[in-house]
Length: 104
Length: 393
Image (cartoon, rainbow over all chains, first blue to last red; front, top):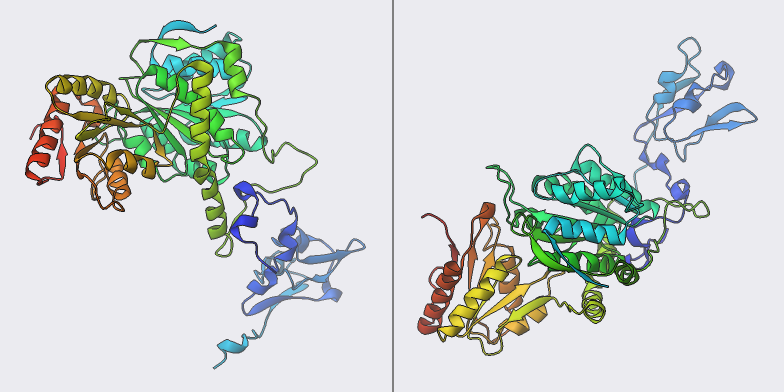
């Protein structure tokens, strides 16, 4: 994404591109673990959807369908809030792919 | 029709506020600016002004209300002093960063500790890097005139930067003076209608004000902010001229007093410049070629114009009503000394700190300064570069 020069910015830090946070893929913040959604166990209580700070719980036709990893930061709140009897969301390890230059 | 009225500095500011009638006024009373706030409150209670008057629980909140109201699209003002300005600190930077044309009247007062309610410039000089334009006044008339011009400068589309107007605590804020109060209608015409840029109360336009910037945007936004204050000089000049055409009192970046053939010069701001004029007159009668330069605009600092005015004299004494602990001289001195650096032919220069906590400065003290400048021109040596006036050693 091309970033503006200081001359191209709107006066007074104003951002006229409302809703542009969708361009910020917060999923890149995950570091080593991610939530896994187990569809069969889900009772559709929507607690995960309610508590997710990044709107990363995917809902379609009034049903939780899974997790949008473009935005999920791996904070784990959803798995904590998921009712203990069901545990339809569990945190699992995620292998991090390092950028080419950082490999030894 | 303009009328002569006997008012003190605080009342002149309140009188200007009555004539301008901003949309929102938010202030928390603090000595010596209290009378500005209480007079405005009285005007509001008497139905003489229609703007909202908000009295929040602190100066931090007062400036926050100003920022909110200005973001919403209103013409906004406040008044404070000393610890009040200090408590506004973080919000001052936000007002400037958001490019909100808020106008503040500051009855200049010292900062604690030790606690003291009298006049010096420690408060506004401490805020000199907050991004606000700073104008200093010599007397009640100038406070009234500067306060009016402040709105025009702040609201200019190329500037859109907050402005503070300083008037020395007690010496101006509480001293009665006969001032020319201009006609209400003429003042309204001069001030004009306020047109906000990107007001928040605009349902047709969705936007965010003051979002977070990380390492990728903060620097660009700060550079963008500087444009406002850098665009200010021609606007300040034009507004000062227009004010002169309309009301007969023209204003420039600084005032030169008996500088035409001056050999030495005293630089001093605000109320002390009035006393200095008398000292210069007496010294002139003694045959000494002394002049005065009184800066009016401190931010943006008119460094080129001041250097041009001072390069021709042989010695300069810069008087600061504030100290800058650990720095090489007080604020006005460092600015002027730095401004003269590029000139091959430049005067010798010394710095005096005076009047902290409202300590008097009299004609005799200016004469001490003039005597020192005379010694420098005779010997070509500065010796002590930094001194204090009217301090018990």
